[in-house]
Image (cartoon, rainbow, N blue to C red; front, side, top):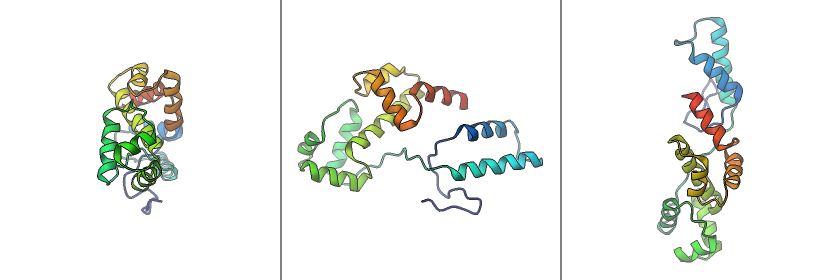
Length: 173
């Protein structure tokens, strides 16, 4: 758990999943164009702080292993996220047994290989959504046989569909 300051906000940057309430409060506060000055504004600012402090961390980072063999594997995965090679094939490529590979990978990244690859795909999908690629192209580029499977995975990880995620991003800017 992250260390908190006296106002209950984390001391270091975190990725948080924003709630609809927090989103609306921030939109309202953004319209002030100055620091809070009225009692209502101060109360709303306090609610924003309380809402942020109450959010769970949403881990979206992608830890990289320190072992040289695993680094080569990760670099190959990132170079071609459509490659859905199974763990036993990766193990053969890096000269480990599948069980040893899985154990070392989890120890060094905090995720299993399949979960790590899925997170890498989601992060790449977010990048592609940001530059305006359509969802079908993203799904195919990331190795999904059909768009429905990609949308289901994205929704499971991000809590919204790729289209909804894109719309929210545009509204926030």
